[in-house]
Length: 286
Image (cartoon, rainbow, N blue to C red; front, side, top):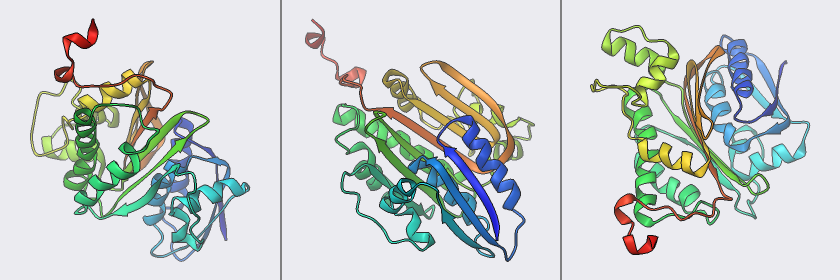
């Protein structure tokens, strides 16, 4: 039995480095029994990341998931993730999870319904007009479409979690395709590093448009996240990009991630009502 520990996993850079180190250690395993212990804390939305990595090797290996904290196992039973590893599903009595899904790239319509039901439709989600909510849904769908059209991934993984005490919702979308760097470099005959490729794909200083990642239509989403004081992250290959109220953070991971992670954090203690500029009536201001 090969044993691995992922400890105190959340959306910090160090956690992504744990994931990529873990994958680098197991990616060549064949016919092995692998035990993964999720110790102390494991952000439930991050099971989308773990699922993508384990799927890369589980066709020839046996995988067991444990934890030193019963609460970690409980929340991953509630969102359905551990049902794939021999556990019974638990009821989400307080409706704090956005259930774990493993989708094929052609299931975009189902993903759209999922985003409305599991994320934007939650009572805890920041208050906004129906028109803006539709635009946010379209923007999140662009992330799915990018994975669907450009990553060559077999599956797309998604999951979210509402943290009432921390007053935030985390929502994560993962693919295990070729990543931004490989797609952009091969399509454009350039030699961008991971961080340059992520910024290009986000449309930052991007002036070229072809049938490749680029200008993902995330402007409304990222602007809302900044106003909401949330967080937007992209991890692809060995690049880590984060946008928050503090600005941009760009780091290189110790090992490459085999695909792309997009993570969104929304603050639920935000008392503002958000609308599109076109919806604002001058009489509402005075």
